[in-house]
Length: 204
Ligand code: TYD
View (cartoon, rainbow, N blue to C red):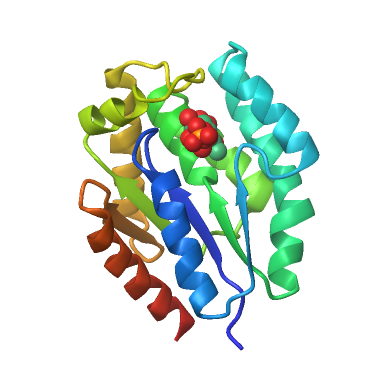
């Protein structure tokens, strides 16, 4: 049996992660892979409380970054690492790349500070695969506007999301060994073919 993999899903709000999630689950299920789906911020009882605060309460960018990593620390020790150790694959809807993209790119926080937090919370440990769902900001915003209630991040302007998107693309270029870029503006069937290919390669 293959080693359990840690897969993370990233992209700007409205990039269509939630729509692609069932496709990923179907690809894993059809191969008999034991997996769990989780998310950040959140994933643990404490993390979910922090998520509630992070998504709805205004705060300083530094506080936001620290709370994201606090939630992540709990998530890693309570959920992610134990699952991988018992052979269960972990699919996390967002992880540390989101902190670099949103708090770093979007809010303009110093990358070095974020790297220090990353080193502290999970030095050396990285996802096996990061699927970056990429779409032009305008398309993402049109998708978002269909939602009835938007959270604090989703309320940000287009310029904020341009910076977030750029930061994600920069990370993908910097870590090509684990990033896989998915053009989320393509029809769902095409994305599905690509996801099937990627999961098949991971299972080899
Ligand atoms: P998201 O994952 O998009 O959930 P939903 O689809 O339910 O809206 O929401 C989480 C938000 O948190 C998203 O706007 C990105 C933000 N975020 C950060 O700013 N930094 C982080 O480190 C993480 C994990 C998320």
